[in-house]
Length: 107
Image (cartoon, rainbow, N blue to C red; front, top):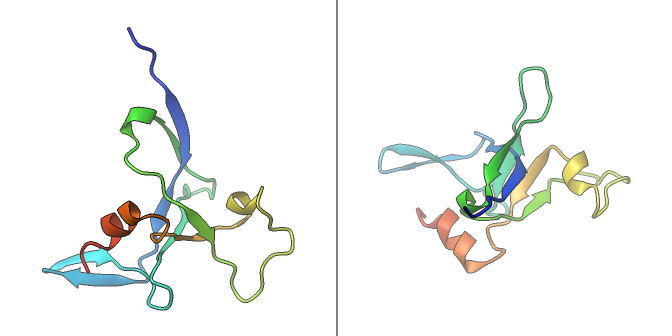
């Protein structure tokens, strides 16, 4: 039997700030100013971060997350800890054409 490979993934959710109506169905829409989807960490009711273990073969696509810096970037933010310090992110749907078409195909 072939061994299975698992990975731990942190969970994020779309912020409901931007939505669009597509054929009578509400879908999340990119932010109007930069055309990227806005994500926020998925948290438990006690405020701890959510994650899950899944099989690697079940991963459909890897996406690039860009921290939302706000008016002023946190001085402690760097390449190594940017995913740990920030709570809100943009999903870079321009990273490759497959991601672009998968996320913006409804427009």
